[in-house]
Image 1 (tube, rainbow, N blue to C red):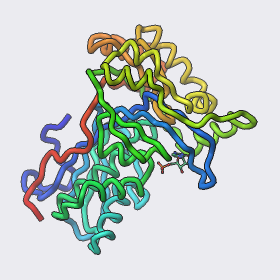
Image 2 (image 1 turned 180 degrees about the vertical axis):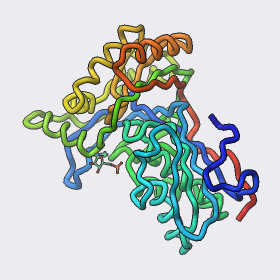
Image 3 (image 1 turned 90 degrees about the horizontal axis):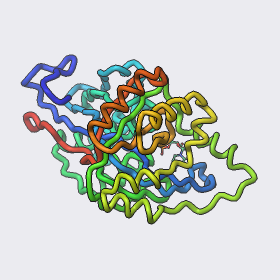
Length: 318
Ligand code: C5P
C-alpha cells in the first residue's frame, strides 16, 4: 500500500491535499457491562492498533464530497452519514468554517467488520482537515471531537494500545513490550454494532452482569510483549452475541486454530475474526489455511502495535 495511486478526480502531483493514514483495531479484551440509560454499554475495552490501514485525503473543493476506492468501496456510504464527512462538518462548525472539502478514502479495513474502519476514517478526516485548514487544533480538543463522533474514534487517533472506559472513549494509553502477529479473516457482509449489542442484551437477560474491568494478566502480557500469555487472556464479551447472529463464524475460528493459531476471537462486534500467531511465517501459513478452508472471503496479515492517525503527505498549504 502507500505508493503512487491517484485519487479519482485528483490532478496528480499538483493537488493541494493532505493524506492521513489510520490503523484498524482489534479489541484484545472487550468487557461489556449492562446497558446504560442512554442505551450505550459501559465497557472496559483494551484496544490494540494493527498495521492494516485506510488513507483519507482531504483537498479543497466547492462543497463537501466523499469518494471511496477499495474492494468494498460500494458498501461505504458516501453521504453525510459517513464518519469522515461528519468529522469535516464537526471541525468546520467548531471553527465557523464552511466544510468545503473533497474527502477521498482508500479503504483496506473491512467495512462494518468490527475493526473500527468507519471510526478510523472519522479520525483521519479530522486530522486531514485540521492540517488542510491550518487550524492546529489542540490534541485534547481533537480527542473531544473524536469522542463526539463515536466511541471508537478517539482510539483511531491515538493508536498503539489503550484501555477505553466509559463507552470506550475515555482512553488511557498502555505500554506494549513487543510485536504481536495477527491474521484477520474477512467474512461476507458486515454486522451492525447496535444489532450486536442488542443480541448481547438478549443473551444477558436475567443474568448478573459484572462491572467491566481490564484483566491484569492481559495488561501484563501486553506490557511484556508475551504472545503466549496474551493468547491465554484474549476475551471478547460480544463474541457469543456475534456468533448468535452469524453461527458460521464458529467454523472460521476453528479453521484458524486448527491451522496453528495460538488463539482466535471475534474482532469487536464482528464479523471479522482475529487470530494471534507466533510470528510472520505462522501468519502466512494460517492465512493460507483460512482461505483454503473456504470459511472466509479474504485474509489480512498484520502486526501490532501500529501508530495512530498520521499525516503522510501534505500538499501546498491552503
Ligand atoms: O459510539 P458509536 O456510534 O460507535 O456506537 C454505535 C452503537 O454501538 C451505539 O449506538 C450503541 O448501540 C452501540 N454501543 C454500545 N455501547 C458502547 C459503544 C457502542 O451499546 N459502549
